[in-house]
Amino acid sequence: MPPFPTISALHAAYASGLGPREVLAETYRRLAAIDDPGIFLTLLPEAETFAAAAALGPFDPTEKPLWGVPFAVKDNLDVAGLPTTAACPDFAFVPSETAPCVARLLAAGAILIGKTNLDQFATGLVGLRTPHPAPRNALNADLVPGGSSSGSAVAVAHGLVAFALGTDTAGSGRVPAGLNNVVGLKPSLGSVSNRGLLPACRTLDTVSVFAGTVADADRVFRIMAGYDAADPYSRDLPVPTQPPGLPPGLRVGMPDAASLRFGGDPLSEAAFVAGLDDLATLTGRPNAVDLAPMFAIAALLYDGPWVAERYQAVRPLIERSPQALHPTTRAVIGRATAFTAADAFAGLYRLAELRRAADALWEHIDVLVVPTYPRPVACAELEVDPIGPNSELGTYTNFVNLLDLCALAVPGRFRTDGLPAGLTLIAPRGRDGLLAALGARLHAAAGVPIGTSGESVPVPEAGPASAGPDEIELAVIGAHLSGLPLNRELTGLGARFLRMGATRPDYRLYALPGGPPRRPGLLRVAAGAGANIAAEVWALSPAAFGRFVAAIPAPLGIGTLHLADGTSPKGFLVEAEGIASGTDITRYGGWRSYLAAQSDGADRPPRLNTGPSTSPSVRALSANRCACAGSR
Image 1 (cartoon, rainbow, N blue to C red):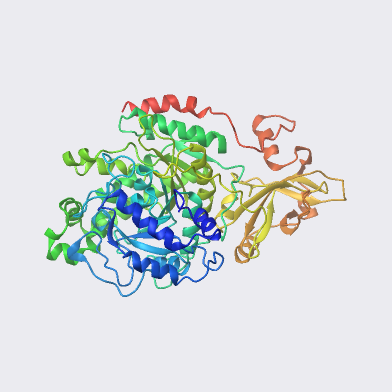
Image 2 (image 1 turned 90 degrees about the horizontal axis):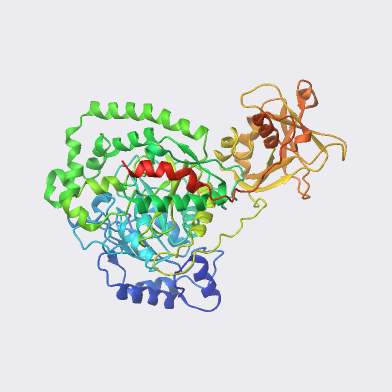
């Protein structure tokens, strides 16, 4: 068994003759060696896992993409025949059906090891609110393991399983990941069925994934994702079958000086700046943005009427036997009785106001990068104050689901004292693939091991540069380029970036009148009578392509473009009549270059830089901001 069982490493070992029985036996041996009784609440007998492996048949990763891969699930997700307890013995029941998200993984060949510990009823970010022994942080037992998906994160960090399911309402799929040096993927709400999940806040919950690498988390997510008509909160979101490439024009934001919060901890501050330096090598310098609306929204989750959703989830138990709840869990959920129905509507109105302000942020950036948590929290702090440190851990997580965003927590460079740090990437719903593309590269750039294994993070594989059999290639040359105003029309339909390119020298480019946004038109001319015009090639499903084309206004249309690399994707063309009032800008070689020249006030084509910035200038940029934030 590899030091850390990534899916690709396991499958390579299986292809070389290793059997899943040996892998499973090693899993149980490692668990015994760790000697942490707090990780699992239900552990399947080793013999049952051997039987499950035998039932898989011959190794076939095509038919079963998770063939022989051990995994665990948080104990608020149903598995038929196993108790669901949510870390509350008096609540326990044995379901007759398996949650669809778990069933999809089992059908894909994954082997369930057991169900993991959690903050009771998924209420907490520390991992200590359980009547059972709490899982120990995999890196440092003095630190909280993070919650509420504590056992799942710790199981992955120790390499007991390749991945584990958690849930995420306020950060439970991200904070434990950061504290245990693993990846935490929080999908877009509704992309994975929540049937068979005991709700915390039913309108905000999602199943999450912990894994050693972004590639594994992303693979598991794609297998789980899918519309479920029997789940009233399921949504038919576009989830491409493959992850995208990293678009060249990506706009990344970071918290401004007033939004950087590290709890006065200079080591966490320095670790975040080091992470920004890694990010700068991939995307260039992030832009500082104001997170005040996000923080105001975050306060609504526990200080507002949304806590009543948690009360509703356990209402029969808390009203019949309140003493059955963990004291801190009971205190948090019990606050719901102070709110009225009128307060609930007032909260909805306030959220709508704040959401309008927060949504404006995405007009200027594509991805937001934040610390996963301000600073690591010691277990001893919770003995003095069981609420305050928990709330602090949610600083950068609590607002995400209220705003219908997706997020991906990746390990960052360790603090200089060896404690974990992490970065979280956030984007509008449906951009899960974009976060995976960036997150995989950011994780590798950090140079940290996977969990506790010492195993290096694999260099991300370059995705396919051409569309799959169920996709259509579309070349864009103007306002739909990455980082430009209309790119969201593509990404909102689940389009994924494939490659950069240029047309053959058989096209001329015109700036068309009208806007905003400003748009160009591409006109086919005689062979060699034009220039190579810069383009990006994206892939869409046939249904998404149809919806996209239906919205294109005259004088633009879609035709077949001929690119210099010999490919012929569909792409934008302009009618000859449409350029009558346009300006020929062919000499700029592309729309980006033209816009840059206009911005510079120059009347000449500037040099077009299509690669990422490699300057580590973010450290200097952020030093003053971080110093100010650390002094609060």
